[in-house]
Length: 295
Image (cartoon, rainbow, N blue to C red; front, side, top):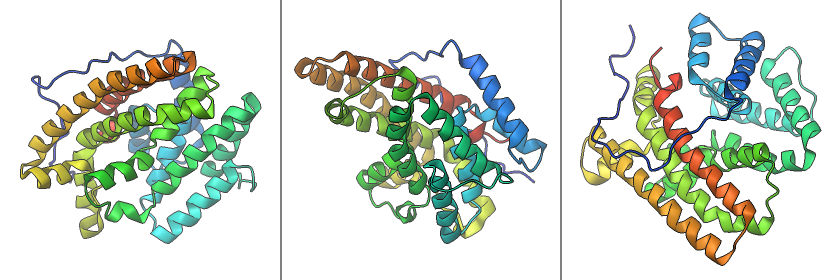
């Protein structure tokens, strides 16, 4: 029998985003290629899993990381660490993949293709990607402390740096180290918005997983933390987080204006505009993805 916990839908009175989502013109083609690639090569256990994957709507590199994350969820911390480190070594080109294991040869092929396209820019994605992968099995997940500590940890765990690195790679932006340093506070502001919308929409999924895992299930979410802090229920906590997300959007404009007044840069302008699309795109994806819905 499935869970009786319904998927969450925002009420109409919640404040909308100031940013408008926009799909890349090649989105339909790339989405089709990605879906066909993984449906052909990944070892999905059943038809339900295949349909759930299609409903999630991922890019190729994020698909691979989400699928391996699902595998890790079923492992002990020790086994997950070993599994992760081998995949990282394969991604770096230090170990040959086992061609009978999809996760290994897909990881190898993906990074080799990226290096063939632009070796220098691919190198810039490696660090953020591996930080994200290791954060999935970080013991901090078990007790991140207060909200400040939670946000600091989740900035890595949610893959903010990876998302921004992929964006830079896709845009062909050649950012200097100084430009990346100047952009970091803006990225950290975006990270809180990213992870809180993730937590708002995925909370019911986390509850369902806890039901399945029993006492061992860990809810990694700001929703119960805010609920406890404010002495309110989960639905009220989501509304509080929603309002906070809108404030981070407004803060984005202020922070960007401050940086560009002191350090005018076409690269930074393009980078910050890309982050605006990340705001709206993540919210839209969180609302629509099948990953957070019962299938």
